[in-house]
Length: 398
Ligand SMILES: Cc1ncc(COP(=O)(O)O)c(C=O)c1O
Image (cartoon, rainbow, N blue to C red; front, side, top):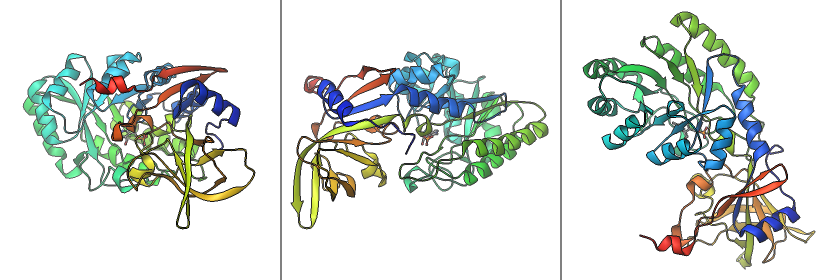
């Protein structure tokens, strides 16, 4: 938490006065620091991190991440377009597809973007539209990790090709004259302890011995950040353990190949604070509710995953109280933070939500007809609008 973006009350007030509330505020320096840490995860010279744009696909942030030497993944044609717009070259982008139609596969192939296919059927569908090409496949290593059942992807989930179906990958590849150029995996999102990731990596290295034309192995993302005062993930220790595994894999495989990771959250979570305004306070029974303009259309994680985000109260009061911070969406579940110890907040005071840069704006919606907020970037003492707030006019266009 000490490493996350913090804003003082005057800055928060100035930013909201100028850009409106609520507002996503990003800090370039923290973003670059996180990129550099991830870039140096491994000593292995064939290492390349690919940023997972699903965590935050603001083009201005993508440009910075590209400048820091990352490649990128995309989960949809729109994310491909955003990656390209930010300056990633087609060969630096992988379309990490899941249950997509052949039309989307074709669109990517026409743009010279390589795909990672998530099932035998999708590999077959790809082979039909792009025979005699190269593609990667996603393996399900059989074990998973993550902060919530909904984001654990290894094991019994809809993702990947299971280890007992490897022979059929070869059969389909032969049928369409495909080269299997990469094996990918992703155990899930947000681990602060690397055991499962390392174990799954070993499984992937072992699996790779059955594929002789590989150009790369992608170990996936999921690197966690501390939202609630937990110890930081020890990237140095994790990196050196991975380096050892890679070294022995390369020896057995007989040649070096590219090794990728696919971090999203680790790169973009901590550089952002989401600012909002207190619009009402009330007592219902024993509970004090602080009403704000940050509904779950603005930040979905607490409602979707029961995720904890630290909330800062910007108030004149020196007194504190336990209150429940809620949004402006017409649902009882619209709770940003339950029973928080905060300064006494009155209408017009401000709040800040920490670590909001990953799966924050990218999960925003217009539910209840609410407008998605603006985004601004702080760089070297300057502030720049990097996305306009929605307008009611833009919502009326069908
Ligand atoms: C296939 C894949 N790769 C990478 C990521 C990025 O995960 P994270 O943001 O936890 O690093 C995800 C997110 O769930 C994913 O599904």
